[in-house]
Amino acid sequence: RARGAKRKAFRSARVHVLRFKPLWWCGIVGKAVASACRPLRRTTSLVLSSSPFRGVMLSSAARSFSAAALRRARVPAHTSVRFSGAAASAPFRGRAVAPISATAGGAAAATPAPAPYPPLRVTAPGRVVALGDVHGDIGQARRALRIAGVLGDGGDAVNPEWVGGNTVVVQVGDVLDRGDDEIAILILLQKLHKQARQSGGAVYILNGNHEVLNVSGDFRYVTQGAFQESTRFGEHLVNLFGKPFEDAFGGGEPDPRKKQVKARAGLFSPGGPLAQQLAMNSTVLIVNDTVFAHGGLMPRHVEFGLEKLNNAVADWMRGAEIVDEADRTALGMAIGSVKDSVVWNRTFGTENFVTPSDRERACDVLGKTLDLLPGVKRMVVGHTPQLSGCNDECDGRIWRIDVGMSFGVVGADPEVLEIMGDAVKVLNAKVPAANVLASKL
Image (cartoon, rainbow, N blue to C red; front, side, top):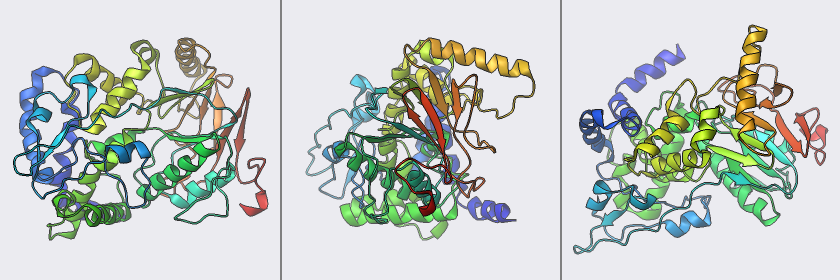
């Protein structure tokens, strides 16, 4: 009944959502259907006709965005904002972010510098902690971070306390959807990352399939609370940067439901402020001898080039038009195919294989994949909830860490994975990190 009520309430605003979904598809298909995509792009202007976000990064009210993002922030000085012709003609040239123009006496604003791409390989000096899908549940996310021994009790909701030293945390994606506090979790992890860097640690977030869905304009898994959070966040950006941004967040929309959908579209559509923040996250990340991906990697991904996959997703989220055939192929491998793209792959997510031969086939594919990555011993994935908690397969070469901790999924007790050298350990409320007292969890 609850789903039926949500579906009915959503029906009046569905036009704004459904017109966004094909844009993701249009960005990666061949030239043969380019003409079919043009009317879809035109109808999208109903929602983003005044959007100044293509190629712009904004700072959040909570000061959660990175210094690099702040340096790229450009706020129009006057109220008339439009897309430049250059953005429509060759936005992908040089892999630069597509520029915008702020009309002020006919003068166009300077083109921002190309944004850096997310990393593929990083080195962790100490332990590595992997955190599964959190799906908008900030309470469970905080519990998981405390179990991992990186979130202290001395902070508060606004100023969290990092106590992890040089620990590197990898959250494997799916922060969005199914819960009410998605943006709050992004801010929490961003603030912890800023503190961790001062101690030699870091917090990395990967892009999962639900991040892809939201940037595509597919909001079917967004809760009412998350729509309201998006509206509040959009209103706060309007308060910071003024009226030129109001229409992009549905400021003039009298229907509350449609206003919420427009606010979310303005934040997460390609080139929007939160889409650009997600563009700074990797889709594949290698830390020391472990490769992390939301769904999983296949040999063809590695052979094609993992860095190309990361870069293609980043460009798409930043609002660049994907015109090169190789980049379109990279984007398809990363986020396109529901069967075996990086964010959708479930080849290794099966908790209990039906037959021994199924297990052998999965382990064989895994072995071929890891053999193509020199020095990498294991893969860590999320995406598929594991009812038995974090577990491994194929002699420890694959670890599955989505335990369904969000109450929008299963509401299971949080668990995280700790990697120290060759030792891999599952941490939970009963067996937390060494610097955590179980009695406090």
